[in-house]
Amino acid sequence: MDSAYSKYTSNRKILTWVGKVAKLCRPKNVVFVDGSRDEHDRLCEELVQSGTFIRLNEEKRPNSYLARSDPRDVARVEKATYICTSKREDAGETNNWEDPAVMKEKLDGLLAGCMAGRTMYVIPFCMGPVKSPFARFGVQITDSPYAVVHSYIMTRIGQKVLNAIGKRQDFLPCIHSVGYPLEDGRPDVPWPCDPDNKYICHFPEDPSVLSYGSGYGGNALLGKKCFALRIASYMGKQEGWLAEHCLIIGCKSPSGVKKYFAAAFPSACGKTNLAMLRPSLPGWEVTCVGDDIAWLRVGPDGRMYGVNPEAGFFGVAPGTSMTTNYSAMQAISQDTIFTNVALTPDGDVWWEGMTNEKPEELIDWRGEKWNPNSDTPAAHPNSRYTCPAQNCPIIDEDWEAPDGVPISGILFGGRRKTVIPLVQEARSWRQGVFMGSCCASERTAAAEGKVGELRIDPFAMIPFCGYNMADYFSHWLEMGHRMGPHAPKIFFVNWFRKGSNNQFLWPGFSENIRVLKWIMARTEDDVAVEDSPYGYLPNPTDIDMDGLDLDQDTVNTLLSVDADGLEHDIQQFGAFYKRLGDRLPETLMEEMSLLKQRLLKY
Ligand code: SAT
Ligand code: MN
Image (cartoon, rainbow, N blue to C red; front, side, top):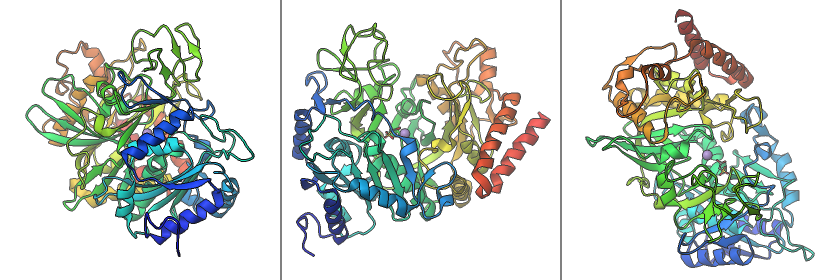
């Protein structure tokens, strides 16, 4: 077969697929993205010309841009996200499901002619360092130049990746369209999308991904949540590894002992801040391997190793400041794309929480004039920065190590104003898996649902697990069996415990190093623990409280499990387990009854 694109690759599967998609979507032209600096700069210039990008003040924020989305396209859409497996049970209770053939027919209808008048970009990409045994390849077709310039930052792309794919057949084909064809003289808009027809569909059995109608974040950058979490979690189940919604950090003590930790928290629980923690304790050092996704495998020595499959950060802007996250502020001081933040009169960016004082005037994320008396936020609450990981001043020296970094501990957490202590250690891997399955966050007034009600989010994977959640729990248990005594210890943390006056008891942020210090000691069995009905608790004198102004009562509350509250938790998690049906591993039911028994004796 002769193809117009055979000068880029001799991979028949890619050439045939690209030809087929082009025929269906009918773009004006097809461009293979080569990943060069020139091409990147040209695309950014085109985005400025078309009004999607505003170039920021070169002196204040070099090589950076602001994009404002359509107000109807500002976040991932879970109700439009599907796992399409031949059997419904394989997607499970916690995912939207549709029959693959039915969904493909529907999408074929939407895709027909959907790229009219546009360029169809073909982006060869790699998740993980290209030469790593963890690396997985994909090819994303998209009609969004905004998605293309993001992929320069978020993944490894271009001709070098296409060469690395060579004749391999196992790349993930991903199709993305904003769903805004320019036919019959229809003029383009700065942020094309099809707000009433969004579909983010995963076909893990193919595997493939099809996303239609949205240009935003995880809906459009298909390497991220779609591949690196949903599809990869399914692959990991088949192949014996884990794709997790985890940050990875390195933590070095003043005496030079360094360990790596992975941590999973539901959204709005401070994941990015922990990923870039600035320790308050002298001599301690924290380095960042990744802020969002970890691929975890068992190494030849039986220990767990992790890589960050991404190459950049796609972080929430509001709340990010020199005090809450100094390293993120440094990382986004250049080469950054901002989406839906506010624009200052001198061509820089601003968002709520960036400075104590609000600027006198701004252009808000909708492009309207804004001042401190305006009753809407200047930046959208889900506004984002996209910057290269390399920009982070505390990026770990081994963040691209092909074999990953050894993981000594796994942390789970949530936002819990009561019940759950500052930190506890699981008695065993299986109790750790139980704790992971019991990740939850209290709803804040801003979210839907009753305030204080628990939103259950096991392993922080509810929106990202690409298969049946009960099977996922079994897979975690199985990973523990494989590692045996080499398995990392599992911890559960909660920075958000409140006192009777509704004030946070723990200062959090930089002070969280004190908890990491204890966790480090526990991974070496350097300190003893106290028993509790739930996990093992620190002896209060073993958490370094030097220089903190916390009275004994506060410390005692922070380091205690509330038995009554825990009983209420168990009821809610019990109901959730029931929902998962009979594929739920017996071991977790046993862990739950052991917890009940310990509570009775308490
Ligand atoms: O939009 S993304 O899915 O990439 C980010 C997020 O929702 O956390
Ligand atoms: Mn995330």
